[in-house]
Length: 266
Ligand SMILES: Nc1ncnc2c1ncn2[C@@H]1O[C@H](COP(=O)(O)OP(=O)(O)O)[C@@H](O)[C@H]1O
Ligand SMILES: [Mg+2]
Image 1 (cartoon, helix red, strand yellow):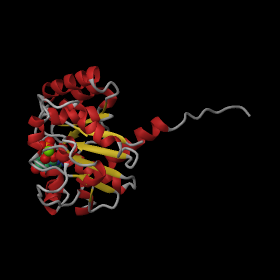
Image 2 (cartoon, protein in one colour):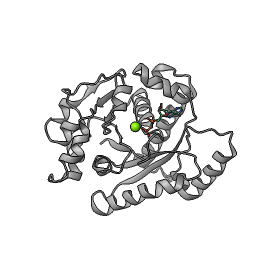
Image 3 (cartoon, protein in one colour):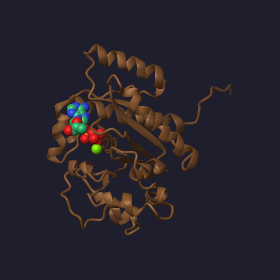
Image 4 (tube, protein in one colour):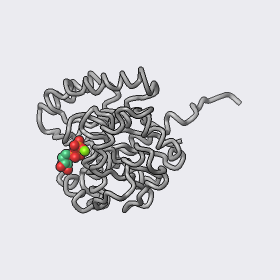
């Protein structure tokens, strides 16, 4: 059964979409079937994988509104083992239209249920808000991956997100776990970055991902070519870091699944 990872942080511009595209692509390149679900009306994950805007195309909006079957919404991508459920700006409407709807927090979870057997990883790219769309993603997810920049007030911004995760655990999704906190656009030469990293390590412990993502121009250029970084420039530091992150997460997953080996006398 696949693992659903929501990439969330209510702050904009911290690297959620870059992480969602490149992590999902790195899973696919590691030859596991992966699905990227664009949950943001800005649709940057969809355009970043080369999909032109099309209001008629079946998208996350239709899934949330129960207007299409999940299988119909899958789009192939430039990578053989990566599929995409795209978004369109009409997704803004779902936030409003769902307010009085039945099971409004469970729409995405229910829609993805039938797809979980087909994909080893399902990555959800969240909008920069703690709105009903992000709520749906966190209720649908097994884990949340939090990209953040090593800034002085980094921890302050994160407490609201952690409170939300707690509330969702208490009311809708008791199994929701933190996949990790990922440092993005990182510059390891500055002493501020080092200080903040030490703070984060103290606060998050092993939840701080060992992999960090450097500031790398290739990551910013790749979406305008409709490609993940590993197809645009596989040797770039940016592409390499997301390949490493995918391995880190796959290894956690394998460690959980693997039976503990005990040496027993014959
Ligand atoms: N590691 C990085 N190095 C350089 N630019 C980056 C990096 N990560 C993201 N960016 C750029 O920063 C901007 C915001 O990133 P994005 O992933 O869209 O953030 P979010 O989805 O959280 O709003 C984008 O223009 C993106 O190309
Ligand atoms: Mg984004």
